[in-house]
Length: 548
Image (cartoon, rainbow, N blue to C red; front, top):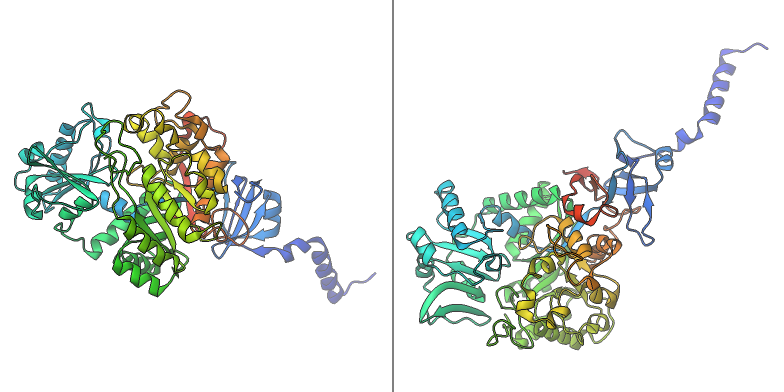
């Protein structure tokens, strides 16, 4: 047979087409991750080995063989069998607050008032240009003498410069005499929903809850540039620990608009489900404006405060504190004010997210929610913290479709003294995560950072082991309310996405969802409990872009 050049070319083309049909059909991707253990956190809680990403979204999830056969890409990541999870959520945090704290004196884990003074002196020497000395993180429950400090040591160390030191929970502070003078606070000062502590007719320097507003109004306001730096510093810290979505629990219009501006400029890449701080100006503005949503920013909820914190005895309880029989805590807003605000929110498309610590505050808000919501509904209203809930009130979460937004690390931070505050019986109704989960089959677990540490794996460990960093106590704290590992992972991914109305966009590794994911050095679904807090993040991706 004689081949012409034309017949040779035709034969070669046919042969190439027959031997490589898959090559012609391969879909182009921007990134492929393969040879991994992928926890998809889909409805079946399936695992996979690989996935492909295009234009910031997952376009294929399956075995390594399947994904590599179906997709072409110039960028591949061989995960070397490392575990991969959906990007972690923190459904209740203070993102801007973290940035502010990174610019202040860190008082976390101080073991005495004297140690605080030493840290402050060092900070003041390193920041001589600061008009105020501001710090945060002290907790008298960590000290040998577990009582609120007074201003005398601050006055001796800093007689001429004002000092403001916020307690770890953000619900109490101590100030010195210079700050008292600038704020014009006197023993006669009174504040609804707060306390100016006076002993023997003299100010101690302690301010609780709403009383802190008396001094904050005279503190110099941060410039926009300073806030930009705070937000970018907070983002860096969050990406380091695998957080791709945060929920800033309470911001004003100016700060929300700054976040949007930085998103659009491309410098702030983390996703933020912002809760608008309650206030007449904010309430009127955002209800009129309506829900505002971009790929990075979601503004569709209001943050309300019912009461204070358990550590500072501001949590509103049905019966007096076990260790302070004259106190039951207090509401930060009256029941009438709360009902008016909730009614306005109910008549809009916005979600209500209310801070409730004590059993009295939880009961009040559950009843107010029930009055408006009436029964099962799709509004996804949340109670933030829900730390102490009486047994007869727990079913109301299910009755009114209320989402419990909890912080597992609060349980392991408070467990050393919670029984002193609540008594041996009432403490059993606190941090009841499993009981709350059973109501609707969903629970969101965050950190409330910077009240607690940013690292979401601390919350994962606290939820499943109910132990602290030293794995205390043996056997765990009130283990009947521990979460399983699957539940704990869902609580920081898909269930948190659901609590934010984002479960169709993120929270799992599935086709069509935004490609937010994290690679860890070890598998938290299998690692011994005592090693969970030490697992490190290898990489964090937002929309398919490596951000850490």
